[in-house]
Image: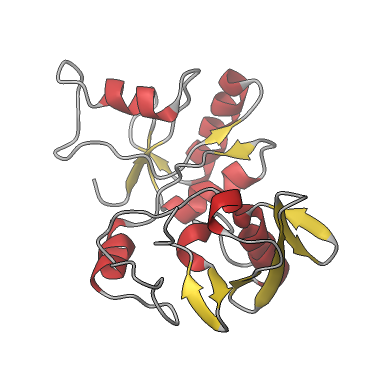
Length: 201
């Protein structure tokens, strides 16, 4: 439903809730629901109630007892960002971006010998990167430290997602900082920058 989002909570995993919402015995929109983003928070019932109250004042709530709001994903993320918690690792990118990436590699160079087939590559930093290897997100360049199991940048050790998120928070505070770092980052291999998206495991 273009321009309308369902904003709710679950005490199970986002995938389990999605499966339930798309079950044949429940009301569904013309196309199946998809998870745009999720965040693990404490006291989810209260957080949902507060979020619904704020969204109801900020935008058009389709029905007073339903979880449907007329607003953009970016607008909801601004409210969700105010909550303490951890973003769900499966927060999805727009499908169009994934399709574009499958058709055309926009990085400096695709991973050596790895075809852009739409199949994700390695997602474990310990297996993907070597100690001392340089990792880049836009203008930031960090170094993978295998003993610290993270990317060292500006004296901090970060996961790949936190590295990209920190970059956006620092240099693009106007942007929603939620990111799929494996798609946006590059690593240096033999003096060349290649996308981290299709790296072999």
